[in-house]
Length: 59
Image 1: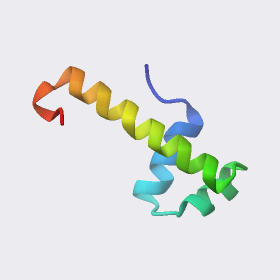
Image 2: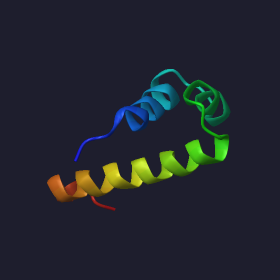
Image 3: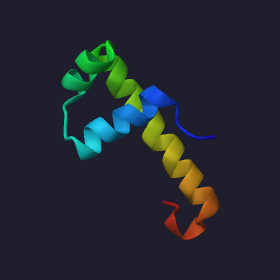
């Protein structure tokens, strides 16, 4: 399954716009710690999806 709107925004704002977790939280009306938790879960989910699709990237 793909990412929802907030999940996509967290990835875009963090990696492309280079905002901090605190800045992302202010933008999305979430706490810095919640953004950090969501970011970790999103990255883990994306890594798992990639590993299933392309086993050579597992690890």
